[in-house]
Length: 129
Image 1 (cartoon, rainbow, N blue to C red):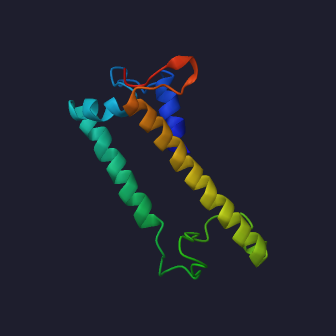
Image 2: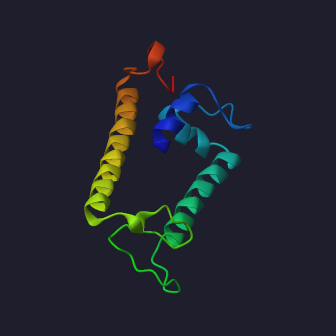
Image 3: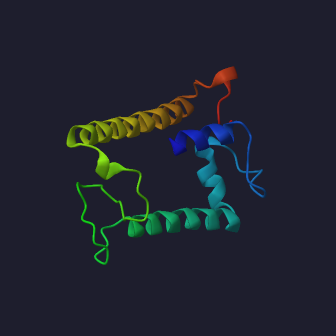
C-alpha cells in the first residue's frame, strides 16, 4: 500500500526538497543513478531494508515465542492480539494476507500500465513522461 501511495504522491508532483528534477514512475531509478545524492538515496533505502529485516527477527533475549511464521511481535507494542480467539486470529491473518496481495496487484497494475504507455490515472496522466 505504501508503494501505491508513493507512486501516486510523486505522480501528483510532490517531491522532497532537492529532488524536484527526479522524474516520477520507473524513470526515477535511472535518474537517481546519475547523481551522488541519488545514489545516497538508494543506499539509504537499502540500509533501511536491512535494518528492518534485522529488527523484525526472533529475538533470543525476549521471552515471547513467535506464534506463526511472520509473527514479528517483540513485546514492545500490544494491540490486543493475544485476547482474540484462534478463529478470529486466523480470519485477521487471512484479511491481512489478502490486503497485501491486493496492494501488490495495485502497484503492479500501475507499473504495467506505465510500461505499456497507457494511463489509468485520473486526467490521463502517465508518470515518467
